[in-house]
Image (cartoon, rainbow, N blue to C red):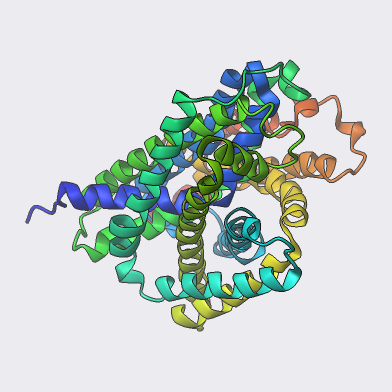
Length: 437
């Protein structure tokens, strides 16, 4: 029997994935990057798009190619190592960093501006309400595609289109000279800034959620599932690129209206108020609340799905545990949370990139088990050096590494390890074991 989805369902899948991706980091990082990049905003934006759009899309395709699950993606790793890696990634983009950040950004940009004297109690009350709503929507897994893909996301996308059109028709300032590292290496700086969105990690989770949503629509054939997952990924990538390009241009033309801003949330807020007047804050609040809420729903749902598969605790109980943890962590504060997350991202992002790269060349590797272990270990070891540097640790002893100065000292050793793996064959014992099996 031929298995197929309607165009409306495929579009809803794409919008659902887009909404999951479009959260806090996607909104707050591009405007500030655009402002600092100034007249170099085009190469900086291209670098940002590589990590914030290209890598997530490639990761979605890798999940589809591998078979649609984390188990398929990590089948050549020891089960314990794969489980530990999954748990670490899900904790980072779940209750430890990314999910609480959605609540923090929603408060800072959509609610706090309406208070003359905002206090900690306001954040506490908001975070409880915000994550309670997210838990409510995450409670029923099967309804995610209908609630998010067909209801919340279209409203969000309309708001983003209105903002983008206004930015390009009526830019508020002229574009000034680039600042800092954007002056000398805008492409690389933009590439590293894309880490902050955490979207490659998100793709590892959200891709599996989309697979579940496809299966809930009655699609069980692997080829059909792969096709629809890639289609959804392309729709989501197009939407993200549209948002980032408009937000980068917004930042690049914000030199006066948002002068001295220290984060993208302030840049965006002041720019929107300059565009639309006092009512602009209401427009921005709706966009930010919907963007952050849909991402929070996806993160809580995906983390709960993962943890329930690894423990005897049910999915719904994990929804409650994750939601409560997010509400607690959200009270740390946005600046502190971002500063804590950056070294962790520098440590684990290269490992995720290496895992995705191995997926595409897996069939050409003579010994996949050795290749996966060696390459991921090499990427982690050298990524830890980059992470330590970001955290302020003196690692100047490793300054001879290629690309060390720009925070990508892991890249060449990882590429070298991958190349070496093409020359590592299986032992006679391994071949005999496979034949017996």
